[in-house]
Image 1 (tube, rainbow, N blue to C red):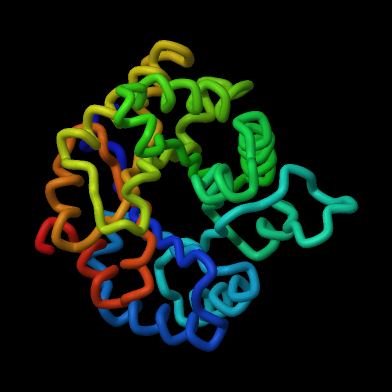
Image 2 (cartoon, rainbow, N blue to C red; image 1 turned 180 degrees about the vertical axis):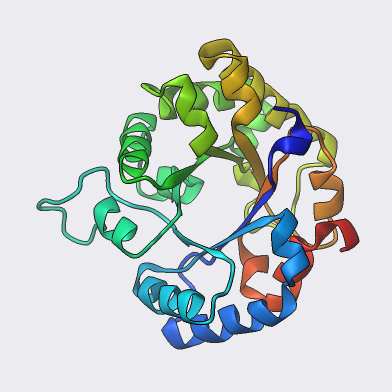
Length: 260
């Protein structure tokens, strides 16, 4: 499908911020700022910490707020002796729609491999949820000129075992690690180059239909001021927003990117 047919997805990753009381306040404020017209043209997902998910689910459903509930991570197994982990089966029972997997903080801090990320992708899809699969290079890799090779390897490893028909349910988020929380942002042209490369990798391995259907987000210090230019790129179908998603006014302006 052409880029115009891929519905944009703006996702707010709250990371380890906001208790459940704060979460209610943020969601309620967003519900007033983000209009019906906004959500008719853009999908919006919010990804609170695990302790907030049930609270946010109740707020979204009781007030009929048209945002999708998301999670920041999950385990690859449904149950077992995995102290501190969260089952994808549990998330699906809370009507979670999108699950972030392979975020750079999980890869770098907790040592998650492409193989483990691929197992999580399988688990998320098994429970009829949509994985947001994160890929991206470090500053050292970028300066070495290996960005495209690094990202291609992550795509092939993290999406190993996928069928071409599953890409309609997949989201890939390109998040250059050097831009996360640093205030630095890839230029729109740089982001487009990598996102186009990701789509090309999908086309080469899984076919044109898969490449045309998969949505690709950009993440890395996304703000209301830079999101219009990013979203104007042919292969960028949304944004994975970190710190700015904790500010209701800023996040609403990001969702409203054509007029931001």
